[in-house]
Length: 119
Image 1 (tube, rainbow, N blue to C red):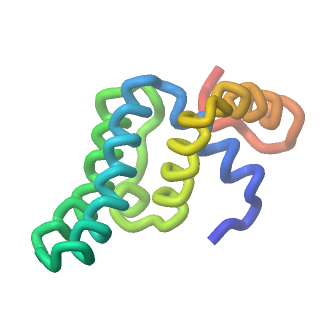
Image 2 (image 1 turned 180 degrees about the horizontal axis):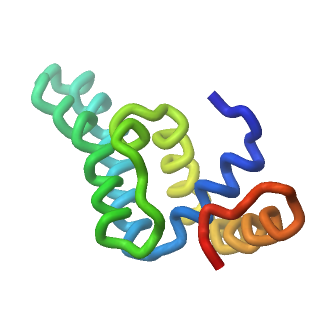
């Protein structure tokens, strides 16, 4: 799943810097985790809809926000994207995502990898 964790995380951060994009990803993460939890708590199968629409909600963040777009597979069925989005929400909630943004910029400045953001 993760070929190079530093590269994957730095790329994810650079593609998710817009506040609007973050809002939709936050909502997407809530739906992603709430759907299965509510299903198992209530046995109401309709809660799975929340899980299945979570990727589309995150994709809307890329459409409305100014960050680069994503492909359909990444938005709907990528375990890496789901885990990274969940981790991003946690990092924002504990106040460390701003440092992550600076780290990601430095990562691309000091590595052979190209940044997903055109300067």
